Amino acid sequence: MKKIIPAFLFFILFFGWSINAQEIAILKYQGGGDWYANPTALPNLIKYCNNNIDTTIDSKPETVEVGSSAIFQYPFLHMTGHGNVVFSDEDLENLRTYLLSGGFLHIDDNYGMKPYITREIKRLFPNTELEELGSEHPIFSNKYTFPKGLPKIHEHDGQRPQAFAISHNNRIVLLFTSESDLGDGWEDPTVHNDTAEVREKALQMGANIITYVFKN
Image (cartoon, rainbow, N blue to C red; front, top):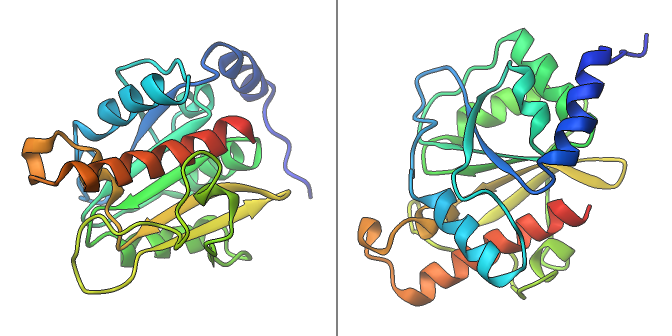
């Protein structure tokens, strides 16, 4: 039987997004993982985008819980952390409805998150596999060009950076970036002592993701 989204969620989705057309929220989850990691990352990315790609995103991102109807107010959710992630059945249903209704989730592995989040993504979309995005995908060239695809920002296990996606109706609804650590590159320069060049790469890739979401 086809699932029917409750009327109040349609109202939140369409009315909320008309107001918050260019807003980002941080996704808070259960399981013990540090969903609050990289506190300066998103504010810095937002500032960079507002200054360079003509967005008008609120400088202070809100925090929303996976199972809350508040997620429907935001077209872009960002999720990060180092450890365990657990979604309840209610969380999964809410998040799935959000994504299939036009929402977008970017999950950036801050190192150590991958085995847990890939398990939960499989529960979220049991009949759909994560697919790696090739370097030719427009998300790597829609504003700034990355000929080799996802850039490497921080080294962890010597593995290449990879971007995986779940798509619906020819649109990415979930993007999982692994072995890149974009969020660390978005943080204040003093946090990781990254060079200006490394931070610029991370911020440009973040701007590409935001450009993709707001234009699709």
